[in-house]
Image (cartoon, rainbow over all chains, first blue to last red; front, side, top):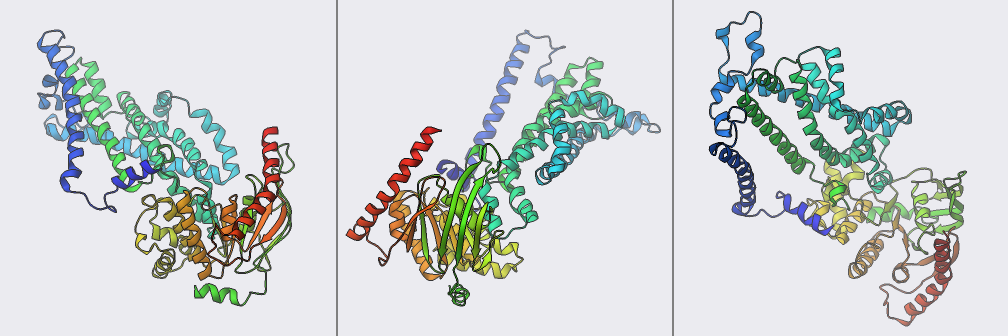
Length: 303
Length: 273
């Protein structure tokens, strides 16, 4: 208890006494420094291998080549617009906008699928624990489908939704929904019984117990589950985009493969890496800022 | 505290808690049926401090949960101020071994939680929370988070949360068992102060003989499982009690003797399992 308490207290600068700005910023700078160093170190090895002529630059171009000419890479982005009927070749967005719209298309799909899966899985998880008949109706099927790889759903996504945004969002949804429903149930079961009992002795109704005790108690644990499944969401969205959604980063990867363009592949991988890294950082920040009471797995809920 | 005095003044002739023939079997009608309590007859007067003392697993916590209304007895009847107990009610506050505070709320919000359930206006419940925290000596802690407090402070917040509901009976389930010895002694003094200022009854579960001797008007000694009342020992010594006085020593010896056979029985059963 004591160690994790201190940690929680330390992390929450707002209610504890504010530390000097320098002391607060130093660890952040150190972390950013190490991240850059780590990336730079491996990029350096890659560059060295290129400089010494160990690798074929046409197959495995080093970072300074595939990041060096962003404009040239960018011309491949945003093909939806280019091939739309009635849009002239001259009406291309400028390269920066092209990359941005492609990235936003993918991010939008991940975010929509994520929001949809989170809302529905928490609702269903709560309903399963609240109504026995809902449990009997849904739980066996959910447990049956949960271990199925989301990739197996790809044909279904295309059969059901054709091309465009819906199949990609569906894929993200499928990758998260079953696991998160089961996680919601597990989190509800792990809620300290005495929190519920305390609320009951104070006269809480059943609805109040769900809204004011169980939901906040399970939220931090669910965010951890969401973070862990975020990577799966990024994987399947690319897959869906690569197989005929018509736009997005996955489509660019497929284009690069078909036109034998390793630089474009590595450039897109870099973009995806940055996006995945940022989204994970965002969820971690959300957790620290709004769901600071630690889930049981990491201790500190012993209050 | 005046509210509590008023609320109990009119009903002082009644019994705060009445148990008649109370029994509890967990998982009845299954092969794993487990008889926790049998034939409990107990009366707690308004304003009385009663300690339930017994070996671990003797069902004394079960009795507390039944009185709180969180569980129903399988036999017998429980009444609180003449009304049958069928569900939890704010007039019977329960305090657990772990403070069971909501970690997502501030200390002040925790104390006001019960009032907010009933739709008490924000200003009023803030005032009530402040008053309750004042009474437990934590007026300054209202904006802190539970994780920022020590174990003893958290337990005091739990008491404040209970007091904010203006209970007529405080049910306490080994509330100080998780605290270190020094904190525990402090908390016993603190509890006696709070109890003296109110006129609520306290029903206090413990397996610590010293704690029973320090606190109780009456000590209810339980047998090993299934828990029955072995005997009830009244203590009339004035408080604060000197634990090293000959009277307290004599009580400790008497209670130790009473418990010894039951602890042996509890051990024998655990080894037989």
